[in-house]
Image (cartoon, rainbow, N blue to C red; front, top):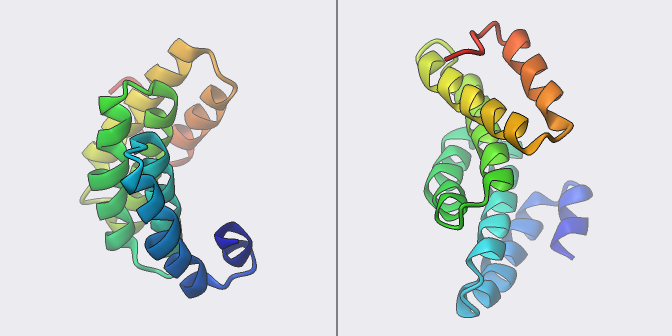
Length: 134
């Protein structure tokens, strides 16, 4: 239901369901991987509402550590890209070094996994005019 509400642009309603119904179930079950996915959706809603700092805090504090702990390289690389893009939107100049590091690491992981998204990450690095070898 929350996914449908989010797709319809009913962000506050979707956020309420994610935070007060869906998240609590998976926290109680100690399903940390699924919990990280739900936090990612909450961060996505925050981003759509223009709450970039909040979205960044959720992704850095709730999602990224879980994927690192689980050694889930696939989801980790996507979190790195999401965080880099949030930092870019918040203040590209201030966070340029961090953005470059995140995207370079994500690219390395994508190349290692040999996934199609490798080309998209390379294109993003070029689009943002970053040095891919950092």
